[in-house]
Image 1 (cartoon, helix red, strand yellow):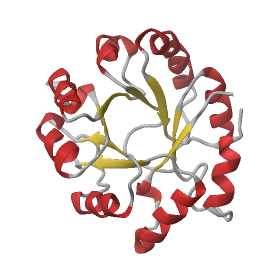
Image 2 (image 1 turned 90 degrees about the horizontal axis):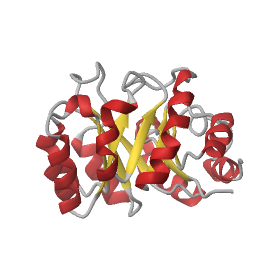
Image 3 (image 1 turned 135 degrees about the vertical axis):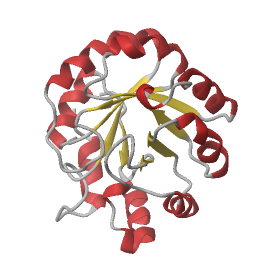
Length: 219
């Protein structure tokens, strides 16, 4: 069984008790934390702010991955990679007219970079970027809102990515309505990382310490 990694989406956490949430998720075995950065323009919603990222960085030494749903993302690389201490930046090609330059800048800060494939983004649009990235983040719902239904047609796109993953040596991460059943299905296909929200982790009766080990055992 391949090694999977799990990245809880802190947009779904209870911010009234954030230190306890992060402590409990770490104790449960979270590998990293996923941060949804939404500017209200690229996506019609608002999510985590800069002070949230600062607070999270102060509370954990686990890797932080920022999903940059922000127009003109290239303007914010130094802020997130150097000043805020984010370890991975996921960028949408539609939001960054200088995405190659952005990836090079991220790597200059010795951080990891990933390209995001939205449901409406074709593999052909981003194929030439695969030799630059560490991760390909595949969105399996429409952008910006929790609690959506998994878009089944995206599974076909994920399957088509596997040969590229093997050729370019990046890891595939999925985000959106990722249930235990989807973890089992997509893990078997070759997906490496799973962003966890309300479908598998948050707002459950069970404790994180009970849920995450069970997810890790799924084939």
